[in-house]
View 1 (cartoon, one colour):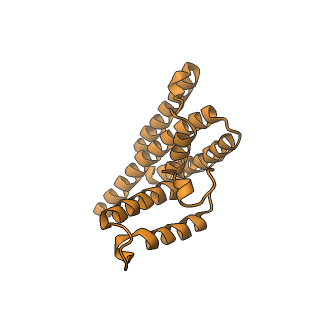
View 2 (cartoon, rainbow, N blue to C red):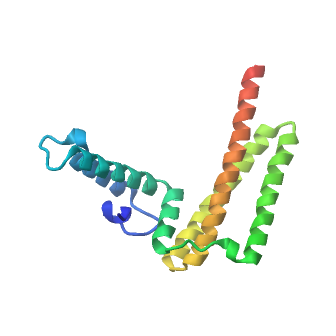
View 3 (cartoon, rainbow, N blue to C red):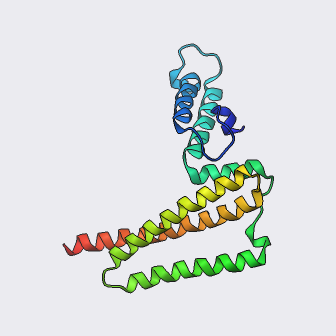
Amino acid sequence: MNYFNLFKLSQKFNIDKKKLIKNFYKLQKKYHPDMQKKKKMSTENQLLISIKINQGFNILKNRFTRARYLLKLKTKKILSPKDNNYYQEKTLKKQFKLHEKIQKIKKKSNSYIHIDKFIKKLKIKLILYFSRFNQKIKEKKINYASQIFYRISFIYKIIKKAQNFKNKLIKENEIQS
């Protein structure tokens, strides 16, 4: 089942979210077992269709999962950046530097301010990467889009790690107060 087709959306990265939501509610109204007065199909089939609708909606509403899903549709096998040694080495160096940056921030006295700035910078980087990803998808350069998605995946992990550290600082501050 192609979720773009299910929600009557063009198979592209930038989607009409209002149309996605509108079509989600239409489909749920039509297929959700609790919404049916007359049984057109078995409750089990309605439930299975409803689950698929929810899965598709959750994938398409989030830009990260939508990008991954789009790559999956565009290729049978997502081309791995690991196939390119130069790219892998360059990316690993960037990843190491970002991990190192978090470790340095942890040692600073005003680490909350620094980690907050660090997270904001990474989120700006994500916007740039998603823009590049979208462009490569439009150009049908799937290998490049896949490499960009690899970077996006890593930035998401770093943000999560930094956010966990920030939350830890918040808790520690609450305990001290």
